[in-house]
Length: 562
Image (cartoon, rainbow, N blue to C red; front, side):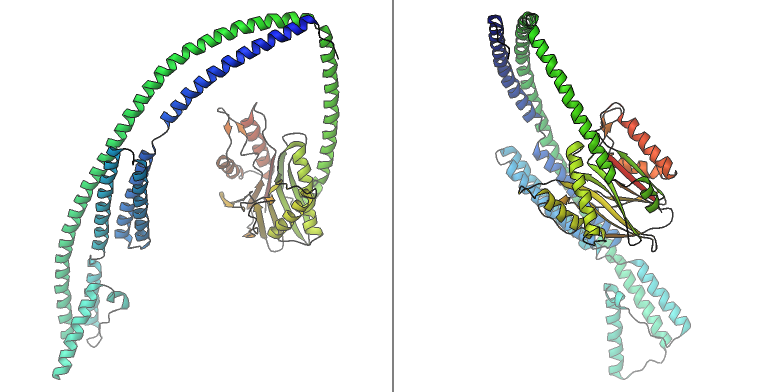
C-alpha cells in the first residue's frame, strides 16, 4: 500500500472541505426546489370533484341512452343498465358531498345537483312507463287482416287469441268483450245462425278499439313531449352548475400558478448564486487535483495494474459464459428435430446477452407433438440458470410422470420448479411464463395452455387470441389449475408462440415500445408470405425498430403453419 505524503493529505483535506461545502449548499437548494415542486405538483393535480362530476354526466347520458334503446327494442337488459346508472349517480353524489364538506358554496352546488338528478331520473322512469303503454298499430292492422282472411275462407272458423296477444292490453279487452257477448247469447238461448255476421261485428269492434287506442296514444305522446321538455330544462340546470364549479376551479388554479411563478423567480436567484459558487469551488478542486495527479505516478501504475487484472477477470468470465451458452444450446431442440416434428415452421430466437432466459422446447410423444416457448425470470446468466431448471422440469413432467395434456404438464412442472428452486430452504419466486401446445396430426386437433403467454391463431387473415392464465409456472400467492384449450385447426392456419421481448422493445423515432397491438398487426400482415419470408420480415422489422437502442430483453417467436 502506498504511503500518503503531506501534500496528498493536504489535497485530501481540501477536497473534503470542498465536497462538504458543495453538499451543504446542494442540500439547501434541493430542499427549496423540492418545496416549490411539491407546491406546483399539488396545484397542478386535477380537481377530484370535477372528475367525479364528468363521470356523473357520462352516467346520466348512459341512462338516457338506455331509455331510448328500450323504447326501440323492448330489451329488458337496457332496464338493468338504467338501474345501474341510477345507482352510480347516487354514489357519485355521496362522494361529492364528502369532497365538498369543507366548502359551503360547493356543498350548495352538490345539493342542487342531488335535487335535479333525482328529478331527472323520475322523469326518465316516467318515460319508461309510457313506453309500455303504447299500442302498436301494426299489430292491430294484422289482426284486421287475419279477420278479413278468415271471413273469406270459412265462416265457421273461430278467431283464436294467442298467448302472446293476450299479453297486450288491447287483445285482452277484445277477448273479454267477445266472451261476455257469447255468455249473454247462451244465457238467452239464442244461437248464432250466421258466423259471417259475427266476423263483421268483430271487425267493427277492432276498428272501434283501434280508434280508442289512437286517442290514447295521442295523449301519451303529448305527455311524453312534456316530460322531454322538462328533462331538457333539468339537464340545462345540471350543466350550468357544472360550468360554475369548473370556472371557479380554473380561477383558483390560475391564482395558484401566479403564486408559484413568484416563488420560482426567487429560486432563480438562489440557483444562480449556487451555480456561481459551485463553479468557483470546482475550479479550485480542478487545480488541486491537477497538482495531485502530477505527483501521483505510483498511483497511475497501480491503477494500470488493476485495470489489467480486471480485463483478465472479464475475459475469464466471458469465456465461462460462452461455455454456458454451449450448454444451453445443447438443451435446445436442433434443426433436424424441429424439421421432423413441425416441418412448416420458423423459430426467431434472439438472446439479449450471450445466454438467455428465453428458450423453446419440443418433444414427440405417442405420435403427438409437444412444443412450447418459455420466458424465465431474468435474462443473461441468472435467466439461463432458471431456464435449465424449467427445461428439465418440462421433460420430467412428460417422461417421468407421464403427463400429456398441456394444462396438466404445466401444473406438474410448477411443482417440480418450486421443489427444485427451494431445496435450500428459502422461498424463491423465480419461474417462467410459457405457451405450451400439443398437436395431434391424426385428428388435426391442437391443445394449448399458457402461463401469462397467450397463443395467436391467424385464420383467413384474422387474428384470434387464445388467452393464457394470469399466473406463472412457479411460486404464486393464489395458484390455481391451468386452463386446457382445444382448438380445431384447418389447413393453412398459422399459430404463433412468443415471449414479451419483441413487443416490449424500445425504438422507433420516439424511442417507445413496439407494443402488442403493433406486433399482432405485423403477424397478420406478414402471414400472406411464406414462413421463411415471414421470419425475415419479423427479424428485419425488429432490427429496424430497435436501431441503435440496446435490446432490453430476450426475444423468441415460433410460427407454425398447418
